[in-house]
Image (cartoon, rainbow, N blue to C red; front, top):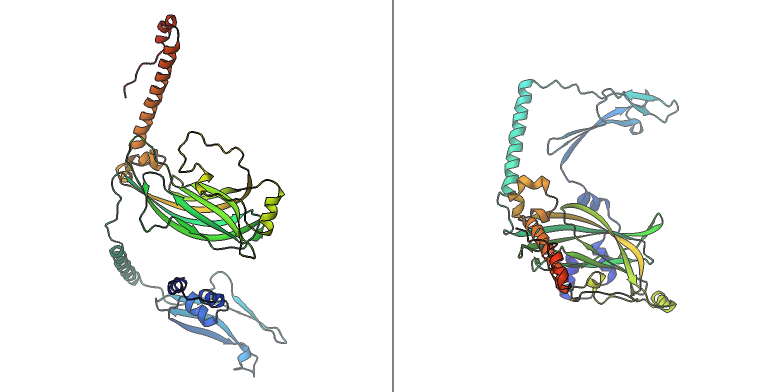
Amino acid sequence: MANVRRRRQDRRPVEASSLKSKIITWEPSEEFIKNNHVINTPVQTMYIMGDLGPYGKLGQREYENVLCTIKVDGNGVITVKPDFTGTKGPYRIELDGEKREVWEYSIENVSAQVQPEEEEREQRVFRELYGRHRDYLNGLVGSDFEMPLPGTLRLFVNGEIVSAQGYEYDNLYVHFFLELPDQWSSSPFQQLSGVTQTCATKAVGWDNVAYFCYPFTVEMFYTQEDEDSLPQWPVLYFEVLSLDFWQRYRVEGYGSLVLPTCPGVHMLTIPTWHPVGLGPVAEMRRFFIGGSPELEDLTYIRIPSTFKGKRLSRFGFRTESTGSVTFRLCCLQQSRAFLENSALRQRMQSVLDRLGGFSQQSSVYNVLEAFQRARRRMQEARESLPQDLISTSASALPQPLEP
């Protein structure tokens, strides 16, 4: 990918064949596999051989067999293969000669037992070694951890677009972006959108599944400004598209999900839909020349961020259910309120209850506000009643509560 990025900066045309050859090694050699996929630790190897030939034919290579392999690496680890016999019984070697001889042998550890003093000294050396290694790791990590400001929640999401299944066409890819509500922010260098690679589907049961395994990382901050309001969580909008042989794309489905409010690992499968036109002409156009009805604003999947009215009507908007997309989200939350309320952590269900305790205050204010609305409605109803009924209804008015 660094080569691809460098070529984009140079703005020089590159053939597709050379691009693939630098990113993917189609026919790796044994030396390439050994250097890139095997831990290259120096190892000394010793073989215990057995000459199982008949009398008169000793010393010939075809009758030599490896009975045991002993390896010692640079870390002092000794590997014996096959293992010591113990209670498993002897090992067997069958020869393919005329007599089909069968040889049995066992491998035993006949080394002298370690004395208690030597064993204690060895354990002490190991404890000192592990202690120095632990101090070394602590020195790398340090003791000063970055903490968010008071009243601020840090939400860190390691996400993965796992797969897409149940769609009509092949060669799928997903375009997604994250919308941050009010009082949420992110760093200027944070990527809030992305596009997966194009993936061909494979048949799994009754569905055609495209496995993307596309990872993404998002770090967000919520700053509490009003104690009476509860935070709105960020929303992930996405669309699934397909690419045909002529490099034309079709919209396969739209969907959205609200990021989980609880930390941990979450597997979410989100169903999608896409708009459809009237009559068979739209489907014929979609099949033959590509293209389909699209949304100009992806936030129309839910309530658009630019909508300011009281009612959002979608009457007459025709859609069709399509497949679904599976996400894996690993959510981490960090706040100073977690440390302050550590004693009450078991009784609190979500981060809304732990963020400075403002959710308890907001619940009390919500009850008082609902009471005031009910009281105003009863006062308005009282003003509309005849005068002879006011004295009767006055006793039914609720009295104000003390907060």
